Image (cartoon, rainbow, N blue to C red):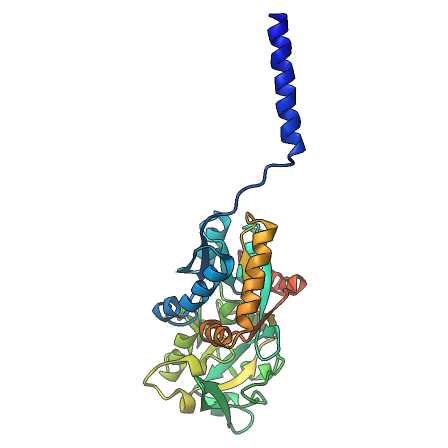
Length: 329
């Protein structure tokens, strides 16, 4: 018995030594990846628009990549947290939640017209009330076509240029109590969180001083103002060219102010993926954005012109805005 126990002890020690020598056990990467998006406009169109991207990633990564259109950004963050989705295209608040709640890693931030930031635009169907000057034609390019829209209070800019907000926010003081304002969704940075913070800084309580309606999507906020369902609306800059409606947006919806700068949306990946796979995903997305076809697809999906390394410190402005509103993450 003593001899058997000695042999068992020696074999166990040898097994432990083998395991220790081989290093820590590393979780295996999934055999298939899922990349998630949330529509800022029409969901069915987005599901079709992302197909060239998922096809490219499948080939570049040598593994199947499936695209998914999530119902909301919180749902996409949850999918990242539980490992159902491995790559997520997220807005600023979504990136904060992905990092703080889902233990994800932000690997890229979007660039538009050379800028890693963007802002809320405030627009109205009552320019005589909110514009200190005569609205001017401000062209935007959509699908290769130049389209005319109206801007005032110094918000006009070249279609391929960017202005840094805030601009024209004093005009918000002309709002009366119970003015109907079209927001998008409560979790949207440019569609609610930042404009609500702007209102609060102007001494306007967005919850009690305004007749707020939520349109869910940015184009629907534009439509609500065009159809006179709201006097003022908010969206990203510029949602008007992306809006499809029988209402004459170009003649009826005038941008009169820009909010402060917000860090652009970006790409987060699950914290469970290996460093090697994360690096390959990042490279594949950068390579795709550098191609003519890829740039066109990314522009169609989210108006993305390029990708850059993320500035994680810039996300603090989102945390501060959420805290100011007392808005739970």
